[in-house]
Image (cartoon, rainbow, N blue to C red):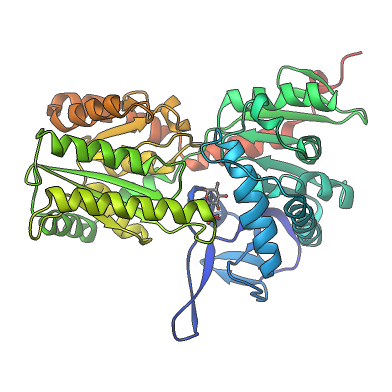
Length: 474
Ligand code: G6P
C-alpha cells in the first residue's frame, strides 16, 4: 500500500474480494456477492482512497494489500463475531425488519452486544486510517453505529453514511429494542443517504419522534449545533463499462453458445439473484411453471435460466429456501422438461462479469421480482447490456429500481396471476413495444450511472452545515 493514512476512507462490512477456501486447503480470492460491491468498486478504482472491510472467512488475519489498484484493509472476524454480528444481528434481526418482515426477525441480546463490539472495531480501524480532516464513507445496515463511534474518536472527520437496503416504516422499525441507539448511531454522520425519498422521510420522522431532535424538511438539528441531512441518492451501475463488455465479440459468441445449449428456444427468460428470501425466486418460478402447465408455451418456445448466487448459507431461513426451490425446480423439470431441454436451468453458483453479460445478452425476458429490494442492480445491468434496444424487463413494484424503470412490465410479486399475465405479455410483446420500453429505460440508466451517484453524494456531503439555512432556527 502507498501510504498509511488516506483522504477518503470507505468502510463496508465486506471488502470487494472474498477469500474462499478450496478443497485442498489452499485459498483464492473472488469478487464478493451483492449490489454494494458492484456499485462501490468502480467508484473506488478511479480514486485514491482505502477500503476497510471483512475479507470473508473465520479468523482470516491478512495484512493490508492492494487488489486491482484498490488499497484494502482487512478486518478479521472470529467465529463468535460471525455468529452474533453477521449471521445474527445483521442478517437475522435487521435484514428481515428492513425488508418488510418477509421473514420473521429474531431478537437476541447477545447478538446486539456483538453488533456493538464489531461496529466499534470498524470505527477504530477507520479512525486509524483517516488523514486529518478526511472524508469517511460508511456503508450499509451492518455498520449503523460506526458514524457515531467514529465521530467520538475523530471529531475532525467528515462522515457520510449510505444505506443500500430499504429503511423500514416507523411501525416496523419500532419493534427493535435498540431503535434509539441505531438512530443515534446514524446521526453521527453529516449526511445519511438512502435509495428512495420515502426512506429518508421515515428516518427523519423517527428521529423527531424517538430521539426528540428538531427537524425541518431533510435536516436534523442536534443540540450541539451540528446539522445532519437525510436524503435520497438512488444507486446505479457502471453502465458504459458494462455495455462495452456486452458489445465485445467474446461475449456475443458466448451468448450465442448459451442459446444453442438451451436448444434455441423462441424466448429465454432469465433470473439472477442472490439466493435470498426477499428476491421472490420461488413465486416467479411457480408462475412460469403454471404457464407451462396451462399450455401457454412449451420448452421449445420458452425456457427459464435461474442463477442463484449462494448467500448466507449458515442462516436457517436461507437453507430452508434453498430446499424449497430445489424441490420446485425438480418438480417443474420432471413435469415439463425433455431430454436435453429442461424447462428451468437452475444454477446455484456465482459467475464472473463476462458470463453475466453473456447471460443478459442471451435473455429475451429478464425477470426481477423481489418482495422488497433497496434498488436491485441486476435490473439496471440488464438494461445496460441491451444496447440494441431490445429485450423485455419484468420488474417488481417493490424494488427501488421500479421508481426509475417505469417502462418495465411492473408486477406485484404477491400476485401470482398478475405475474403470469406480465410474463405472458413480455413473452408475446412485438418488437416495437419492446424497443419503445427498452429505449426509455436505457436513457435513464445511461444518464444516471454510478459515477453520477457517487459525485452527488460527495458534493452533498462536503456541503452539509455550510449554509445559513442549515443553522438551527431559533
Ligand atoms: C446486499 C447488502 C450488502 C451485502 C450483500 C451480500 O447487497 O446490501 O451489504 O454485502 O447483500 O450479502 P453478504 O451477507 O454476503 O455480504
